[in-house]
Image (tube, rainbow, N blue to C red):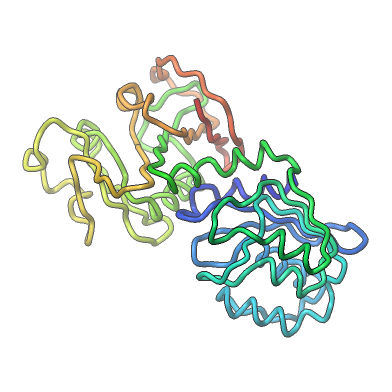
Length: 321
């Protein structure tokens, strides 16, 4: 289950508005066949991705379709009972309904899985019921494996589902300085751009706009640029319209956060962090492997790590208060 959780964390925030979910599949002899996750809303769920990877390991000649619904039906027709008596570890109860993608519980049953371990029960009325369905098909189901860790993984999803979720992104040097034109690695910036491409709103400070003259798009992943909210006491007319962010097509720019925005990412430095830290639900902090001569961030902030990982030469962490 820890492997499933770790894999899901790699795609945290990128699955918005869906939850991050991971899945590990073992064959009948308890050998790991695949470790996969849900990667993007509207695409294959974690279980479907894991089943595809497991079958690919067993039958490399399979030519899998890319679209989730096509992949689902391809597997139903061609699985050859290769996963008979397999075991799945899933961080969230498998869904039991047809949405943009087919029900994962039905797929696990059709392929003859013997047992499914689940970290957290799905409380969503539309998607829930997967475990009950599996049990009716004679599949053994066990809840609560690493449940606290599973609940921690779900926190952003539950927050934006019920209201709004605020994430502060900060890039630092090894000695804690936020200064420098490019602080984080290309891999870290790519992850940040992926997040930008799915959020409802990017929130920045007016001082940052005037000083850095940023573009604030998602060019590293060739995806849509986020709408921007500039936190400023001045009007938009006071900004130089030659600043690149104002020339992004189809972008909306606000000076107040719209009520309908569910997922907000704040980007800025020390002063911006001081002003908004108490409003944040999570912090995404990248740290490079360099020491520089600039002053480090001087702020009192006691955080609890939810996940830590590596992106190129950087380390990064997702934290909460």
